[in-house]
Length: 553
Image 1: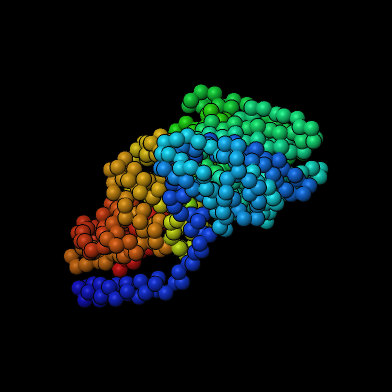
Image 2 (image 1 turned 60 degrees about the vertical axis):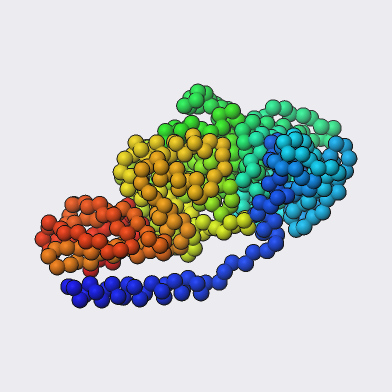
């Protein structure tokens, strides 16, 4: 037994450099100047803090053309005379007005640099207006690519929507296109041809008939909103309004579906009510009571547009009728209603400062699906759903992307992130505390932008457990850790973690015999434990609740 133990230790030590070399051999991603201009917070962007936008745009559906203005109201963070805003280079910046006069500007890729005639002093509240026009990029696979989704309903009427997460809101309107600076409030004014209407974020405050057979819809957003969440939805919609009695009192809930699908409204009503009930339980009050909750039918599958969720799941349960977990639990509710509503808390209320940390949005929201199941069907069903979702994990790359280049991590951020959070819940082993952590995240970071360290430090502090290495391994590395257990003489076991994260430590449960559960606290050095059971008693790790590899010898 001692010789076997020594041989295994030697093999493990010798194998690690090979793994590291294999990682180094992977080609590095290359990024361009355009990526940096979009993703980096340079002094031209940090010099001003956006307070208010008024986006006023006319949509010419026949010619797939847009034209309009955006008012930038800002506070100067530092003295400056030049700033950057963003607009895709295929769209024209017709002019930039400041105090009624045109300003000089230069363009570099999708970045626009505006020169002011005098220095704007720190602390000053000021504004300028951008006039722009053009044919925006047409999305071919919304919402996974960005731009305008130009469609028609079955009656031949226009059915148009925007979706731009990741690519950036500057694909269709001028703004300071970085997730770290959310505008405090805004007015969205959209003119569309008569016969269809526009639905955007917030509340409809005015409808205006124009002379050119267009109607302008004015939507007011009073809560902070991220650029990529700003949306327009144009169609022949039927509208239904109701109130939901939530934690903060009556919440207005609005449904906009195509006229041809008006008889399917009840499906959305049932799923929305159940979703709000379960998520207010787990996460706290819906974060945007002042702007209400809306769900709007779109031709594309869906997006978490704040207070105006895009919905295209065909009024059925599952994900387009499928259960990606393979357990059956995913067929008992409408995936898009639940998932995109979960983003109202994680993504819209709590927003990552950099797209690299998009895992914060998607990991927590993926786990929100399991919590929805937990609320209505119990913890066992919830755990089965999480375990089933492992089928979608590739372990191909870290779920955190590189900073400052507007790049998210691996798509594993959905199922792998959800699995990681389920492990943390298992380790904490106190569901009341777990719920307190989830609600506390949403109250502590209410309407704020965050980064990796904010989330890690908060979970560590409130749980009383140091999950730093768990986050590091599952978020910043591609693989999963392996729990190595070796049987020793006199009924002892030696155990340790083999992981990419240096000095990895994470509590884990093993099962001795049929039911005896023992909580181990391994690190990357061998530790020893003497068992009281017979030497031939089987030992297994709890790989149902822990997403790990095992080597038990």
